[in-house]
Image (cartoon, rainbow, N blue to C red):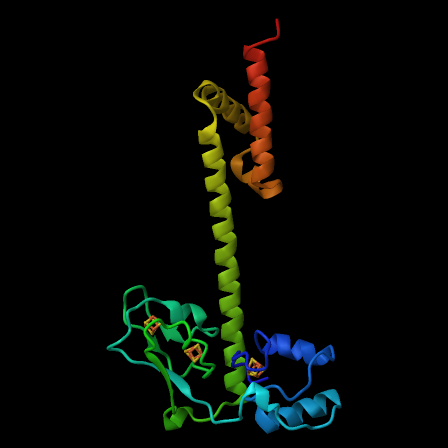
Length: 225
Ligand code: SF4
Ligand code: SF4
Ligand code: SF4
């Protein structure tokens, strides 16, 4: 697969399309960037017959690269978030720029641009064509980006869970907040620190433990008569 991640095949990227071919869920002629050469390679690998490129997916054409019209860019970062291979440099409210050597020509950055300031242009002579080495490098950048986004998502989930726990603790009435504080201290003293709880059982379990301890403390303070 050319690893442009352009989605013209109707799948979310090259890997899902390859998996669909292997599982016999898709024909081998849906990749315009791969073109006739790609179809022949897939036919050889899968043992299927060579067929013409499915025109509904697009046409085979030389690769173009994206270019940002600097005067129009408002620095919204939408294009950076859309680029599957980290080929765009820039930051919030700053002019963005395409790194031509890294651009696969997938054109996925065009639709999200609110001011339509990205265009597809012919690459400079040195960058004409798309080799196996280019494809491998693009796949590596995609994998690195996916790993980074997964890390960020995990850290955001953790942050939200901690925020929720703090909010729940703050919601406890003034009467019991003092109890909560002493209970939390005793829980920590017992060797069950916040990190261990989060690692072992998550925020829900931590909250349940605190609530149970508050109930016990309340019962101690207000024994049944
Ligand atoms: S390069 Fe081909 S296989 Fe990869 S996403 Fe584009 S159309 Fe699909
Ligand atoms: S800069 Fe645009 S066209 Fe180039 S790889 Fe990124 S999303 Fe695709
Ligand atoms: S999406 Fe368009 S306006 Fe926004 S940063 Fe990218 S090029 Fe600039």
